[in-house]
Length: 377
Length: 204
Image (tube, rainbow over all chains, first blue to last red; front, side, top):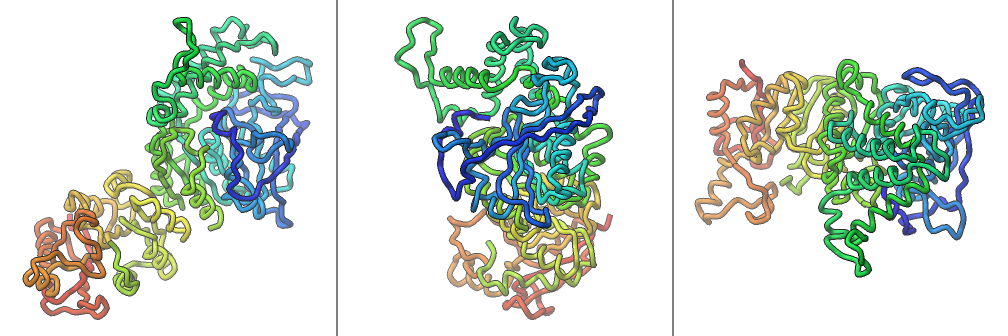
């Protein structure tokens, strides 16, 4: 996700305004799909709008790899930076908080307040680091289901997510068909292709080979900052498109470059800023765990995509973006083709946008219309 | 490409519905705004999927609650196994395919039956227009001048039936509509029919 895209506050409708996060804590031991467990589960989340009496108007938002639970509103009046999907969520907006009760939690394994490698193991009083169990998308979704249980919600009106959030969305529709009213997956994939795994591993290697990583046992002020920044810089390129980058930066230069390898081009400046700002908000071990969970995610496994998706009962909408080369349209189409082969109610729409994989995080009236209409049908 | 007159736009609905069985699985290639599928869902309880290349049309289908796939008909057909659908509908789309024969036969592979509806270019008014004025037909169905139209490969009833014979495609049912697109006609269809609808099956 792109830090600079969210910096401006633009209103397309009403605003959810000032929001607060909450913590869901389950004292019951949480067991992971690939083995291992943690003594308590903690998920940080936010909600917007009101849960109706029937408790059937809840929409769960699933964030992308480096997103978090703060998807709309601001924490204080003087804050300029809004939640990452603020233009999509609010009164009168496509995900209309005057109609729906919106929930978004920081993913399990994340680092914004939910249980993850960086959180303290209550049994030892120390961070889990690499003792944190191996994580899967299914684990993330099961943790969210416990949160939804705790809110007294049996069935969600919809589950919505992009990228990693889209994978979670599908996992919801597969694992909890009776609890999902409908789902929308944006810029999604049934599994990573070799190129995506390759990019992720290059990022992981940048972290792991940084001396600061120390087998995952770094401290807050002595971590693999350089490795994490480089991982982010490279990943960030995969979220954009060549056309989009050309348009945004071209070959524009900075006058201030003196030494040979100083920042010379605007694009260098931008990426280094992205890398640096990422280090201040993201944990390197979380990055390793989450990217690994995504690389292992495979809806073709164990038998076939059709076999996996046969569990789905809810109507679904999948949206691909033409310039997305990380989770390209073909991977999105493949999901819908399988659903249609199975006789499911599924739709595929494709938006021509130049913003690459991050297109779903960019204001686009066509996407608003599509989501608004699908959520209402 | 769709006529502005809604009666004409929906001329073939009732005839297609006559041939569709309750609860059939229907694939509509070039589904537009999903009006036919919505009608078949309401009247026949079909499981219908639409395909259209245009985002705005797809948006309308989503609004109607019709499952829709935005994409190219040929690519979509390639993704389905044989007989995945009971029926594949080509309503006023055949004349726009790059390779009509290949696409029609793909439709007959994916669908147990295919329904094809098209404007008969042998219709006397269309002939007259060309003979008298030497101009392309511009009417409610083809309202746009050549420079604002998609490439089309118009054909008359007789040539379509020649094609079916040549390729061993079995014509199960056929309905010719007169120039008003409402009353059925059977005499000299190539001359008198404004619109033709066929219910086809692969005979191999």
